[in-house]
Length: 76
Image (cartoon, rainbow, N blue to C red; front, side, top):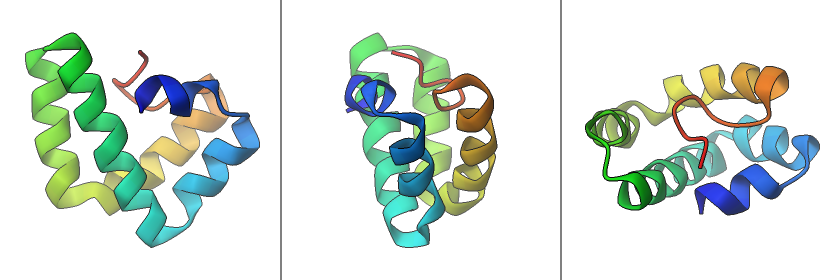
């Protein structure tokens, strides 16, 4: 899912992250898939945090995607 998200156009990424309910679901799917791909402890911590505080991370990721075309700590 992280690779799929990163292959999308910047407009699609921003739209997915701007819609609050969709934002949280996309955050969870991308973060957990990034963790299962890399098995990094940092990815695990971020995935757990996003599971409970996903909306706050989503707004940060909108800005991050505008600048770098991927989510924070989810470049796969």
